[in-house]
Length: 593
Image 1 (cartoon, rainbow, N blue to C red):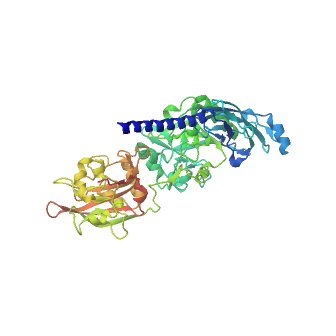
Image 2 (image 1 turned 180 degrees about the vertical axis):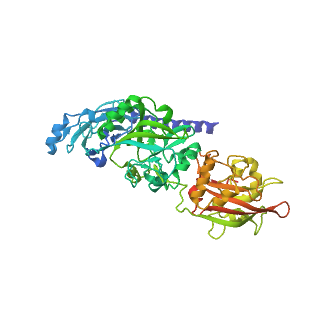
Image 3 (image 1 turned 90 degrees about the horizontal axis):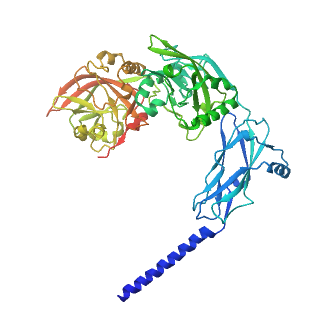
């Protein structure tokens, strides 16, 4: 009992001491003196910024405190034009006062949350409205009042930042008139528009083959999205998959790059188009619409337009397009005036006639120079060669064991295409399909990931993926007699290069979407049956659906029963000569079993 009492007394003393220390520390945060000062680049009180009339420019300011506070602190700032004369006299300069129309504050307060060393940011947006060429302006920004902590003060020696502002000569506004795009595909059919590139005839509209040569410069294509007529970017299929990719697929044949521009979810009257006649008016108009419509054009990331044939009506027919260094970061804009939508071939196709205004600054190529840009990416479906390679008399067996070839891979090894289960596990990420007993009466091709996505096939595929580190996806289509994707012997015979197999896929694509199919096994294999295989990635927006970018085709030459209910299949197969598995590896998953 005595020891227990002493222990309790000792603990009480410790707690009392800790409490005393905490009180002392809290007392410092509450009663101690704090000095608030501006954070300055390189400790300089002067910042210089050159305003680009083609883009919105911003100055970002922040403040700091020398001691933490137990209270929230708010410091208000304002511009102080009375300081300009004294600054000019002291520094032998002749800076002019900046018009209030040339800048705006998103907020005019530094906010210090409790126990914070640095404040929130103040963003000052600058534009070239009212600014003259070759004139420098001075914008003094000063901290003026402080609230929240009675013991906090503004540092009188570090309360002002002087922003020296000038502007670049404004770029020209380009106005292109009566441009035409069509949904029809052909050598002389113009499907694509590019603001900052021209074709061999000096025009801004391109056929698919012309666009493929400058794919990194393409802005939008006119296509039918089901029954809708829309403008799409080439990157939309990669980002959002599904029917976006299915309907876009025929228009990006041969594209090395996929690109993004933003098509805004707003329609405007033609008076908006007519009111913009200079680069500065373009910038001002976007800011005006941003404020009046409460729509952030600078952060929009839409990749498709309105349905042109139904929503472009009357005088509301102006679209806004945006470019920038990242998706969701737009720094420059164009106005597109859809003048006419014309049905051709009894509604099977359409063409549009439009005018467009944009700035004479090549933001498409500027994006490539920006660190972290994601608006121009490699096309996973691009084939540097149009050649296909044919493997004849390929044999696979359902038997597992030494010298038993179970797996086919087009690109895992230059010297062979069939692999035993043991060989396949060492290159599991490159395997395309294996031969399995699907039932007592059927054999089929399976891809490695089928058990992961569909538990009912897990037991069948399990022996073939034993010790696989990776499970790659391969789309496995089939003949399915009477269905929209019914393949035939002549289909196999007619494939001579990548273009011809792409044309075959486009033919199916009118009724069956191989570019978005997620079949993971073939139909039952039998002599003279033809099937399609596809390599793809996951839909970026859902991370589950697949986007098939490259294709091959096979024909079964013979099926032979071996021993113990096993089979051997002999087939020919045509695949792109260049490796299309590696650029489509985003669908490959880690084997967790």
